[in-house]
Length: 323
Picture 1 (cartoon, rainbow, N blue to C red):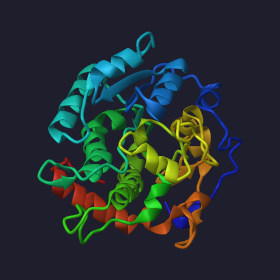
Picture 2: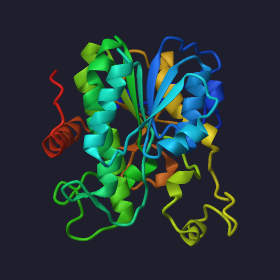
Picture 3: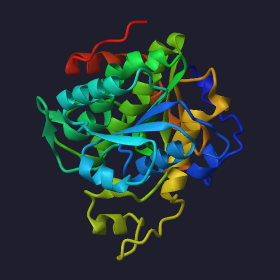
């Protein structure tokens, strides 16, 4: 991937495209997908669209009973327990997936947390970085043999425009010197984008391509740890929780870019790219407002991506992927 690749393709879709529209002409029969968080919000929309198109979907869930209730009656999906902040549990879930599938065509990293109170997990890692990045990083490394076996797999990672808040704080990635919930979220979303860049670099020769994306502004369970008043103050919702902010998408529209990344033939032979509104995003300038879209250069920088990968392997003990 180079900066010149990070240019819109002129996709026939847009910010208004729904999940259903993306898969309307897709036959995913015989394909297996893993969708983290695939039982609520954008993840649920993703699971419903993939199964409707014929795919088998495995949903690792922090709340498996809630997941089974949400997916009751949905044919072609199965739920297993997994907490992204518990790396031993992530490895166990990956092993169970290996027991029930001999290949993996799609890995959709949709689950996440946002703007949480300060939490420490594992050996003292900052909680948003651990769940949003380390958990998905280890899951992808553990599942890589299944992705390689597909002979043409895609890994799709939900990042966010929140990546514009900060790059990787190599001097203090775990906020030992003072916590800021929004900078912590922003760093985790930059990590999601860089993770896709380097995974694609390592996997492309074996048919594994990776993409990161901004799904858009959507009110889902992601905001569950934000006070209603904060959402009101930001102009997102009214006092009753109804969405009033400009430019917000429905959950189905929010899931569309991830599904486009997973299934579009326009992306054949491509990877390591950051997407938005069902197209490749432009590179944005450092002073560009977050809502103007685009991706910061630091979030797709190959050298930054390689450094983050090495940091992640060292921290988690994940099995490195050799190119």
